[in-house]
Amino acid sequence: MFKKHPNPLKSSRLTEKAEDTRTRILNAALDLFRRKGFEQTTMREIAGEAGVSLGNAYYYFESKEALVMAFYERAYMELPSRVAASVAPATSLEQQLSAIINAKFAYFAPNRAFLGALFRHAADPGNPLSPFSAETRHIREADQEHFAQALKDSGMHVPKDLAAHLPKLLWLYQMGLILFWIYDRSPRQRGTAVLEKKSLALVVNGLKLIRLPILGSLRKRIVELVIAVEGEGGHDA
Amino acid sequence: MFKKHPNPLKSSRLTEKAEDTRTRILNAALDLFRRKGFEQTTMREIAGEAGVSLGNAYYYFESKEALVMAFYERAYMELPSRVAASVAPATSLEQQLSAIINAKFAYFAPNRAFLGALFRHAADPGNPLSPFSAETRHIREADQEHFAQALKDSGMHVPKDLAAHLPKLLWLYQMGLILFWIYDRSPRQRGTAVLEKKSLALVVNGLKLIRLPILGSLRKRIVELVIAVEGEGGHDA
Image 1 (cartoon, chains in turn blue, cyan):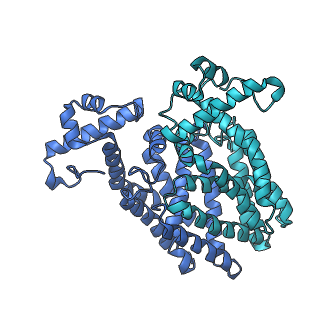
Image 2: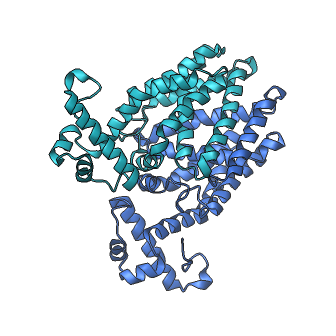
Image 3: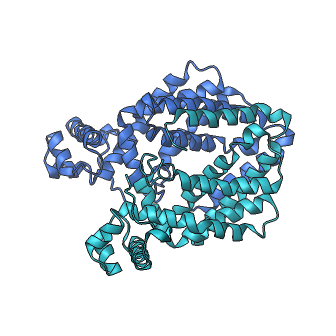
């Protein structure tokens, strides 16, 4: 669905001037998506805002969807260092998970309304812009690595059969929080902060308990559930 | 947001002929939503399909959104007897919960694609057509009653603090399944059937275990989470 376009992140392939132009178009697009809304913004307006011709805008981005994908790719490049900085002072698993999630809220905060519009557009996992699509798999997997690292650093003992799926499950949990955040109408999204705090306490408590022999059948069912859903392939989680 | 319109369910307020006209318009609208899509269908087309004037269509339904709300209200009236029939042969809690959920899948199956379009339109709990909106509260609460009844019939012992919130939590779980179903691309939505089976086993297993004293802190955190999110009021769950 997305043609290979010049990628500014591989500087050998684009001149500095071309990189600047591409970045200017992307920034203009995000600015318009925030101010006017994703659906209401046209490629012509984006080109105008960036001070380039319509043809030039299309040379770098074949569609508004390609601009959104570039926005994702930018986050994919910029988030790891921010997550690392956010996680550094954390001393417990609960704090680490909170730091990972809060780094994302901070990063995406200026685009919260835009993400809401995008979710309406791309809730369907069949849509390339969905966080569950084949096209965003590398971003999803990189993000799950943050959770894998936090679990490893915590030294928490979780039985292997479940441990293998935990980064993905924690990522899904994070996506639920982000969805809640997108539609959170409470002042300064305080509702999301409360949900995050209370649900994280629950998650970490559950992780501590799940190794108990008496919860063995429950653990087995969680693992079976994850494997069955992945095996069906109806969704690309 | 929705003006009071003649309601065919209260027959004292509408003549039989008016009821027929209203039903014909609603059926024509649902047929067009299924065939053409919700966004692509106009009130003029709906009136044409129903064989009434545009003014007459607007007399009964002020907007396409009002037609969707009438579709919800129809389900609200028709579902309880179907759920009851579906639940009747069930002998375990797991079977009962499955019967409640499957009665809805069967009822909404002809409109599955339409519900997908609707979800894009109404994912925001601030939208009256959202299953989380103030306008659909009575439907949501009636639906939660099915789960309350199943829990009561099962005779399962769940500590009171959690039991009070279980119908709502099971309803939320059901909404997750429905969301998965809407986007399920597997043949005959087999993926959803697998997810339902595996997750129901997990839910019922969890319900059996949650009374254990060793899980007391976990249970307390679940209750705190539900209360905190409700108290924030950022969402009207």
